[in-house]
Length: 411
Ligand code: NAP
Image (cartoon, rainbow, N blue to C red; front, side):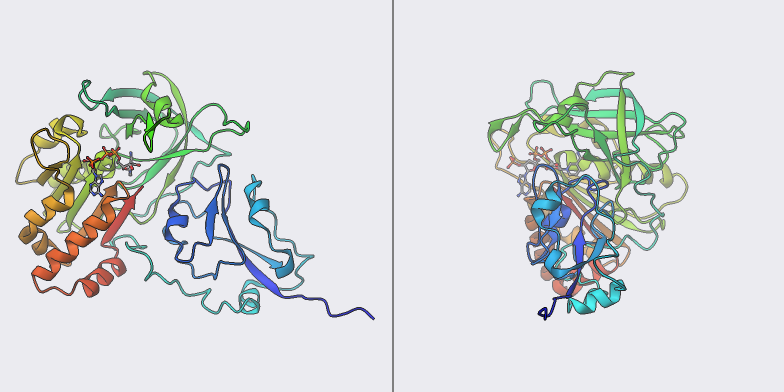
């Protein structure tokens, strides 16, 4: 007689390689390190993932939200997942008559339905008044094209920071984007293993009605990558983009992102904190509000913007020309000769009383974008500023997240 056969079923969490834009958000969010990646794919370790769902809301494309019911003994290994170009079909032969709920129960993961967001540092929902975004209209398999209509260097030619403002026109092809969303660029060519390069993600720097109002175009803020961890490397996509000429045609996918969006109610305030090219979404939001202001938007705008030097700060000229009664801007330079190093969080502390006034207002929405390293510093500054005003930071932080009022996008 045969021995008992294990039919323990697993609701295996998988990432769709076709729409994943390899932005690393899931790996950073996972509280138990169940997600990893190689040069090809982001994958989930079946023996570690507990289905807590923390990674699902922050994913800009939805690639993370894929599940297959499999016999536990046959779970897809990460080595197998690394080789995938598409997700496998649900194998109905292997797991007869198992629906998702039963599979979750069989796996003992009774929390599979609930979304545990306490481990996430920013909001996983958009502001209540945000417009509805479109996502994934164009994918790796079905990209669209855009024509370069402008490519300008934003930073002083004497500096090593080569940051470009690039304008892409979609012509007659619909490409609706909202401020805070991003798009993917497919650079031509292939990596060493012969596979086509994956898309690189860039935040849109223009408002929803176009870089030029009424035009079907978007702008991007792109820094030429020529170094990584001190070693000389040529960033595949950033060099491609920075070298583009007017009239060149680019393959584009997206749009992506459904939470880092701006509120639309006219009395909402924006507290924006960014470094370097993380200014892209702030420019988009600011410009949208500038255009809307003429139509009665009354909320305040406060911006903290950090760069190495004034010469390396993208959009320095246009930014400093904006009326003071429209936007309250504080710049922080870290490498100005003869001056002490100053980061955005230092500037926030100096303006603590004004930041606190915004923190006390339920119509304030906070956006942080730029270097990963700034996230801790900015959250710490917000905590200190809140506590100086006898605000309970932990309670406020939780409320800001719950209400879609604290958005973090750092790389
Ligand atoms: P960067 O020039 O390297 O740095 C900008 C400023 O941030 C510098 O003054 C730098 O100071 C400072 N800084 C460094 N560590 C900090 C910390 N812990 N706290 C606060 N400030 C700190 O910046 P970048 O090369 O433009 O990079 C911006 C980042 O934004 C990139 O990681 C990019 O991926 C990301 N991003 C870009 C986009 C986009 O659309 N292009 C969108 C979202 C995010 P020092 O170096 O002098 O210490």
